[in-house]
Image (cartoon, rainbow, N blue to C red; front, side):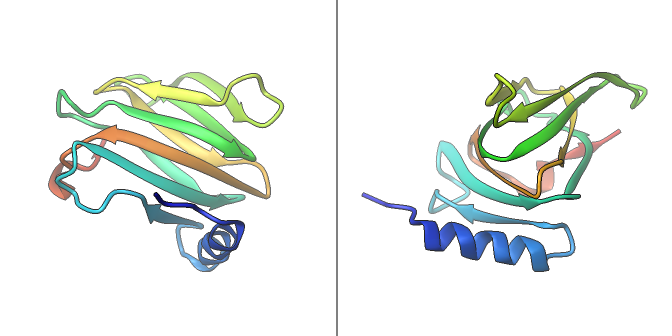
Length: 132
């Protein structure tokens, strides 16, 4: 059994605030070879994940926003935004699942946000993201 305590989350937020990307990860899986990859991602306002997609057929991705708010954009092949919405606290949306090939971006719009990312493994860093 593994418990994630509030002190760990506060440390994750602190690391995010000191990071160039304004986010920090806590891996919940023990290996990139595991069938299910799980991680907590702490973000602070202004953290922006550029439009990208996952090109392999098993690379679906699910976000579960546990705290704060994120703006999520879905982009067309030309990079233009075709849909955008806020997900998280007080939005009525807390879970977003992307199919392989969905071009998406994420930005933290609240002072801080915490999300769990779940995706199928194994994880191959050379196929982590493809950019438009």
